[in-house]
Image 1 (cartoon, rainbow, N blue to C red):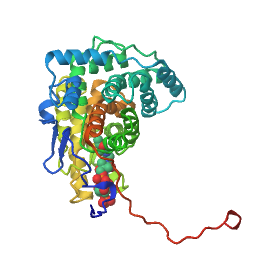
Image 2 (cartoon, rainbow, N blue to C red):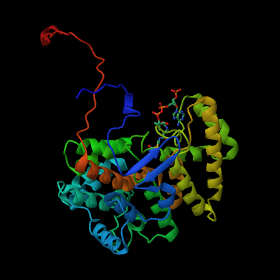
Image 3 (cartoon, rainbow, N blue to C red):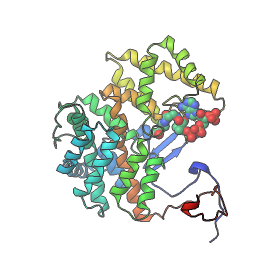
Image 4 (cartoon, rainbow, N blue to C red):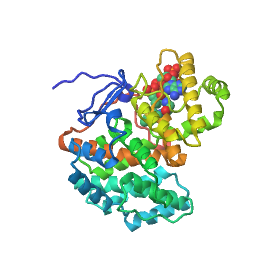
Length: 378
Ligand code: ACO
């Protein structure tokens, strides 16, 4: 079979595989996750239901869900060597994403990496423990043992704070985790699929995906997006601050997307969660400021980058929701990973079952015809 070669830097617009997991319509601003619109399912489901949906292509029955929760709760404890690695990482003050990558690789000790469903369960169950245990160690606190009685989201907050969280915080976190669990062939998911497409194991795929997610233009934007809002500080300062940044050629974090050329539908779901969460809290001024900064940013992006359709992306409201829940900016991206590991494993399982080796071409732009020169003569 002779295939036409197409040159698409960054593989933009190229379809590399089929998936039943999520459909991202960048023109209509629609995200479908396993058949459900994101706004239909994310504010209602628990994270466990969402993971089950991705892995099995249907929501669990009550009995199945109860069994799945018990199974995940039984896999939350980390291998002792992972706890030691986290301790050493904290001594060196390594970023949380680096600690997550290191400890995730050690989950091969909790499940056979070649048993893809078992490894997927071990990964999803333990990510929250890794992030929470590392965060506490980094801050000089003793890690909190996971509580098998709590749901995944509630237990994550419990392991971070050492206290049982309120229902409102758990609901907001479940909504966040569900909203970002899967999103087509984003860079980290594509990385996981590329790795398992060589018939490598799922833990290797997920470790690679963490590395891809760490980059500031993929998963690292919500921290800076929130810092930007705090730096702006007041509604009057929004326009001059944003103008200044755009004049200096800076990118406004939380805006623009490779696929969405209209508003990211996940931003609306998270805006809904934030509005509910902030409505009677003492931080309603922050919510009003965020809304104002968003409006000004979109207006100025159109002025400075006309026709690019740079709109709000998921990270802008992620920042607000996670801040409202009480998380610090340094664990925004790792919390994204706590969710996205559900999508990565689902994609890896799908690719292991039916995918081809992912192997694109490169356009060679180097020299030709060079002749060997011995080391003495160079
Ligand atoms: N602020 C200012 N200008 C921007 C922004 C932004 N946020 N985003 C894009 N642009 C400009 C670029 O400078 C470029 O301008 P030019 O053509 O004059 O050079 C033009 O818009 C197109 O940008 P590209 O980088 O080609 O667009 P791409 O599709 O590669 O980028 C990306 C998408 C990386 C998300 C980009 O919009 C960005 O850097 N945004 C800020 C970071 C961010 O919010 N990332 C989170 C994304 S969501 C996620 O990963 C879950």
